[in-house]
Image 1: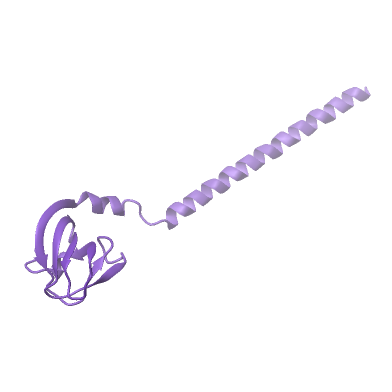
Image 2 (image 1 turned 135 degrees about the vertical axis):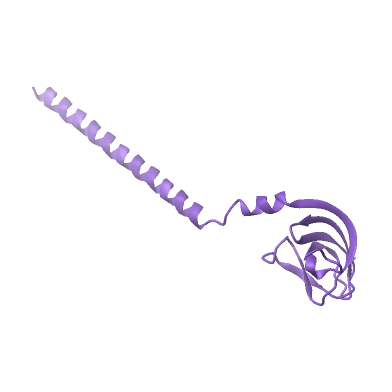
Length: 129
């Protein structure tokens, strides 16, 4: 009789451990789900970049900056860092456009700025804006 009581207690303990393990797994799954949902809500919209990419086109033309203090940016929007300033008469060769933003190489700059970057099209002579 004593062994039956012992077996019954053992089965009860196993059942209790299964319930606790099940609760822990449920709690962990719920926590992961909530954290993933919070991350998705607080993350910037992932589709913004691909939309900008889908409107990009190859270009091949030269043009001059028509304004003073046009920012040469690291990407096609004002939210990207400025690499420096371009001034009236500075010249660029453009190879790509994304919406109203043009990507190209600085050919001549009054400040000595060199390299590649993005400029908004309304900063150029005869822009289409």
